[in-house]
Length: 143
Image (cartoon, rainbow, N blue to C red; front, side, top):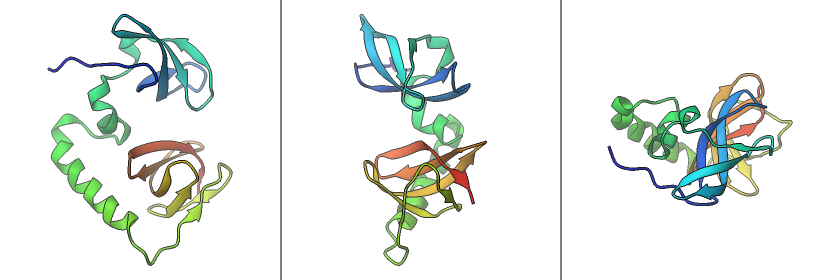
């Protein structure tokens, strides 16, 4: 297994004790080559990094999409399908708003991440959106 490399302002999945979910956290302080402090990108709280609370950096994309290492070949097929649906010019993307409701596979436009495709819902008020740069978990509701 390859060693995981971390960098300041990089992102890792970490259990947020306030949100009670495993979410993206930004590394804000390093202790040697390991993260010491992380900032939750959802609730904006900072906490100490505990390695056992988050998966390794190399598996962030697979974990976020709910896929395992054995499902990696299938993930590439899913990602290719999402990219085709994302580039469909016939569908006008809905502007992203945190209070909006979304349908499955609905195209959205985010001011920071650009054009995306809703690919899943996380109870109660989060949606998984696939953007060109990868999966993001955003606030939103199922329509």
